[in-house]
Image (tube, rainbow, N blue to C red):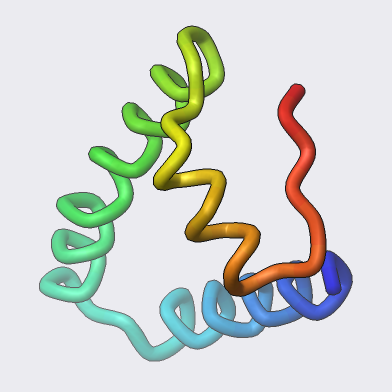
Length: 65
């Protein structure tokens, strides 16, 4: 499944790179920056159980690192 996600992100990135405009880029920055901060804090501290349960409900595995 990680190959599918990687190819999907590459395809979406290609579409945004070729067909995006300044408004699209600003929207992505506003959406992705909080996500990066949350991922950092979850990695440094502890991942809450509701996040683990969410990923286990839509995926077949979840590994805490």
